[in-house]
Image 1 (cartoon, rainbow, N blue to C red):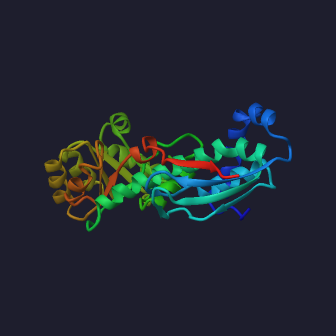
Image 2 (cartoon, one colour; image 1 turned 135 degrees about the vertical axis):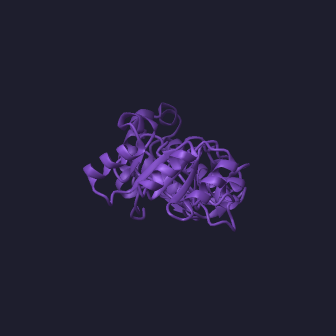
Image 3 (cartoon, one colour; image 1 turned 60 degrees about the vertical axis):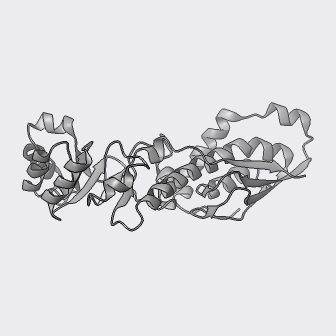
Length: 281
């Protein structure tokens, strides 16, 4: 097995351990196959898509049985077509079949994220606007799912609550105003802390600009209001559109002049890419 690249090297081993702990033993394969029975299989893409999770697919077999071999033919971020053979797998039958579902879960889930992200990125071709992910990720899988977003051509936003301050309606209500909330954040963390303010109205956009906020999120605004907000900002801050963004309206929203569109669905609602392990021997 090849050495695991990041983010897999750091985040995958405990996920594999947890996955196998909840799934094994495989009482069916132990009954049907002798300990030394062997088989070979191929991983086949049953639909077009963008791959992610290939190191996890390979590692799942070796994690369970170091004698298993997985030869990955197509890497993360590669586009594959329906019918493409993505990988070869061989080893003890019991081990291959015991690891199969866990390996597929990683590959299908992460490739689904990459594929959906790629569709959004394609919708923005020719526009100076990038698609961002969110923190709406599977618990424990965030680093891998955000990697899958990058594989699809997207851009990661916050990795967690720790790498940027984002002032939402709850924070603003507690502080009494945008200026009050901004002051509290800067007093606590310094003026250079990355700061995002969620704005539902044009008045909130102006208040954020008065506080020299560098990143303004337009929350669930209609297209006409977004366009007006971009005009008000006039390059003084990065502008992000958020809420209700779909493949059908992404391009129209991007054409308002926003710098980013953020799409929670990239990680919380992407359909799994249909990949199947077919036994050939």
